[in-house]
Amino acid sequence: MAGIFKAYDIRGTYPDQVDETIAFRVGYHFRDLLDDEDLARGPVVVVSRDMRSHSVPLAEALKSGLRARGVAVIDIGVADTPQNYFGIGFLKASGGIQVTASHNPAVYNGFKMSRRDAIPVSYETGIAELEKLVLASDADSDLPPLAGEEDRPVFEEYCEHVLADVTVLEPRLKLAADAANGMGTIYLPILERLNVDLELLYFELDGTFPNHEANPLKHENLVDVERAVSENGCDLGVAFDGDADRAILIDETGHFISADKLTGLLAPRFLKDEPGATIVYDLRSSWATKEAIEEAGGVPLRERVGHSFMKATMRLHNSPFGGELAGHFYFRRNFTADSSIMTLIETLNHIRETGKPLSELVAPLNRYHSTGEINFHVDDKDGMIRRLAEVFSDGEIDYLDGITVQFDDWWFNVRPSNTEPLLRLVLEAKSAELMDAKKELLLSYLGAPE
Image 1 (cartoon, rainbow, N blue to C red):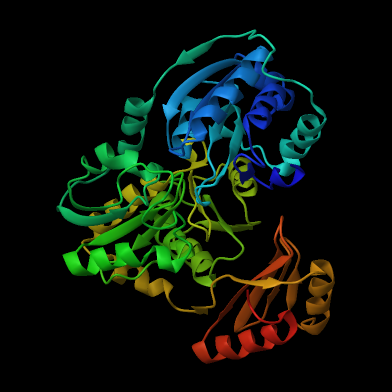
Image 2 (image 1 turned 135 degrees about the horizontal axis):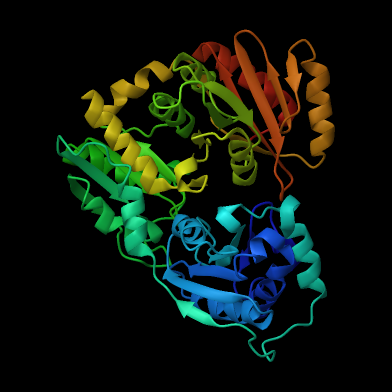
């Protein structure tokens, strides 16, 4: 059971790792994570769930646990995770919990938790404490409710919220969208208001994921939408993950756009209105991302990987926008939370306003050559990082997240997984030949990729 408490959420297989008893106790002890300012708003917590069949009993048990501790529940129903964030802020709740296992296979489920204004709860800011409380708890469903429950859908308000970002609706474009049978399916009423001809893939809610895994970071899960773009002459494509908090964009040639490049492409849109603003990006991102922010008059700021770190830094610097290599894009206007549909809307705006195809817009950012993220099984992760620091001591080293070493013409980051005996490598260089050579050099220390 202890292994289900992750860096950013609670997640495991149902019902052997995550079951209704766990759900009840998570709800029951969630109040212990809320501070006085959170509780002053109720106490009341927004609850929603994804399309998995076992999300229904888990959500019911979770709500019972909350109510048994005197926390009122606002149930917004079946929703994408960004809608849960929106509901927290819009309804001025003490916090929120989304029942979901995001992009994981059908047998998984879990809980993504936030405090007021969608402030994320991570392992460092509450999940570790919750783990201790839940593992030691004997609270069960026999406890009576001490607070009420209200069904309060917010989808119509959510639609208006994201559609407020639409700046132009001409010309009409053609879009291929792959929801992977996940929560991106509920975006159809929004997509239909964007003046686009739609090629829809897997827009039927089905938590068994019958067509392909709902993880757009694996290229095999992008093949269908890439083909749809190419075969139907689309201007762009989008692939959502299971709970629809991430988006990967496809250009009109049928090739996916690395999310760090999309951060660099969209950042100037926010800097136009806020010259000198800070734009936050994760440290796996290309040098081109940093340079694009600087060229647009912004202040680029590297941050650790993970939404809790990104959001905290954005709040600290009042940043209007940020992005991660994993396809999370964050908007201050959206309670500093991620939104896949707002990312798509901003991309459509940019294509229409410039009159240029997406591949041409992204082309200037393709000035370096990257390996992408590669995983390695390493038992002694700390020892390997120390070894790399010794071997590459002639570079500029920092330890913001794992180890990053920068040289004039190449750089790499190696960071440990929070939950597995894995190290993750990202390497970038000024030429493909240099990238290949340095990759082989790193492999001689890290071993064969997973």
